[in-house]
Amino acid sequence: MKIFVFLLAWFMSVVAMSSFSTLMGHIFDSEFREEIILSKLISGNSFNQKDHSVYSILGWFIHFLVGGLFLYVYAIIWEWNLANLPLWETIVFGSVIGFLGIIGWSITFKIYHDPPKINFKGYYIQLFFAHIVFSLVAMIVFQWLR
Image 1: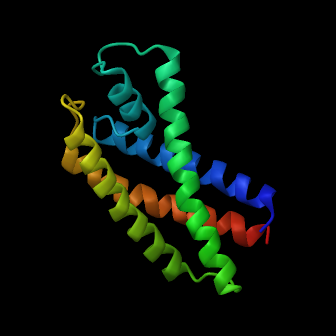
Image 2: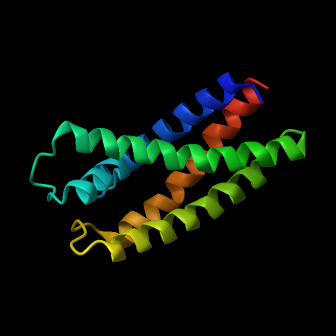
């Protein structure tokens, strides 16, 4: 796999996922942006408090890092497949990483003594679909630039 294709898919997939989470947060009047929640966990600040830019950068960094790990696994699966990945497999992969994301966030929130006050049920539902968006965008970039 070409490094350029991987990097472009990585960037576009994480941005698409983050945009989806932002949109869902606005629709449901809740904070769903992963990078913001991460920055609040790191800083210990509430959503009413402004974070230092270092925490915001760390939130984005962690979000992109985890996205890159998921995408790396995805890229390996595609290399094994050696064919165009069908839409249904892309949605299945997005669903699997969506469930893994929910498990990861659940553990993260349990570890922190004072996690941010968010709509957890709504967050987990949108997180599941955000990972499908991530997967679909990755598939489009990989197949378009293959």
